[in-house]
Amino acid sequence: MCNKEVSTRKDTRMRPIIFFTAVTLLGMMSFIAAPKHLSAQRNIPVDENGRSCIADVHGRAVEQRTQKGVWEHTVFATNRCNRTINLTVCYANTNDCTNLTASPGQESSTLLGIKSEQRFQYNWRPTE
Image (cartoon, rainbow, N blue to C red; front, top):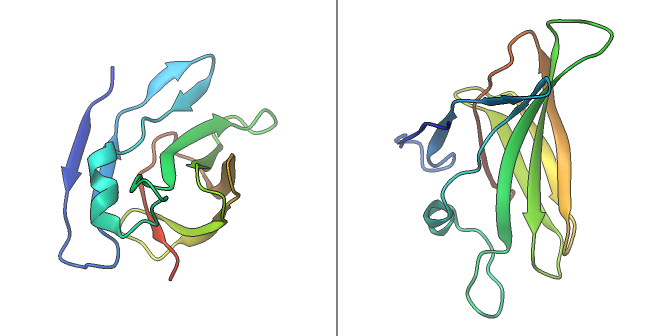
């Protein structure tokens, strides 16, 4: 169903990179989020109980209806705190990044890119 491999880079700014194997469902590719224990390694803001404000981060690739073979890569983040958190989301091992503003108490999303490949790898970190 889903294979996850975690490898760490020497660059301390980008933290662990997560590799995903996709599950196909109705023409959409869904990706599973990074394990929760990794959030402590990323200096993510925490709530008053010490829980990570970013409860979930996951990506999805959806094929465009008008252009077959062209995929929109979207990354979602759920913010459980009552303050806005800015994240930087990048394709793995690139400087191809975008900002994601996680609104308080809800799931937010950003379009990471449009490519001809279904599968994609990304990493994220809080914006400083």
